[in-house]
Image (cartoon, rainbow, N blue to C red; front, side, top):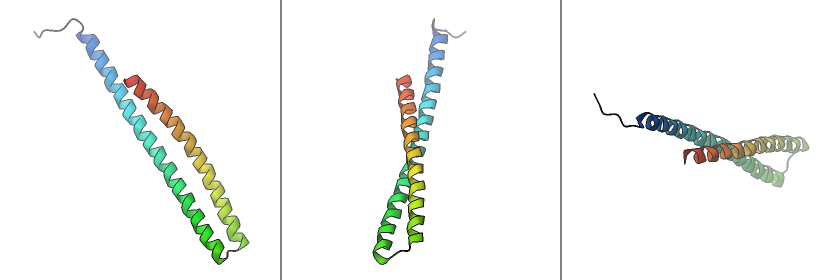
Length: 102
């Protein structure tokens, strides 16, 4: 019969809680990174679109094209705003998980 420490069950319980919290933390970091990457991609698209618009304005561009660009930029800004809110939310979740882990 193997020797069992007095608080072996308690130790196992705490180790399981730690493992579960670590898994949740890693998942929250992964979610944060995914949302942050999408935010970066959308911001890059907006920057490229604005550069393209500037170069087309120098060469000449129709009013319809200008409206199209403006509408696209407006939609992109709404998407960026949405992802900024998500990044803040995911960062807060990640920080909470990190505090629980420590």
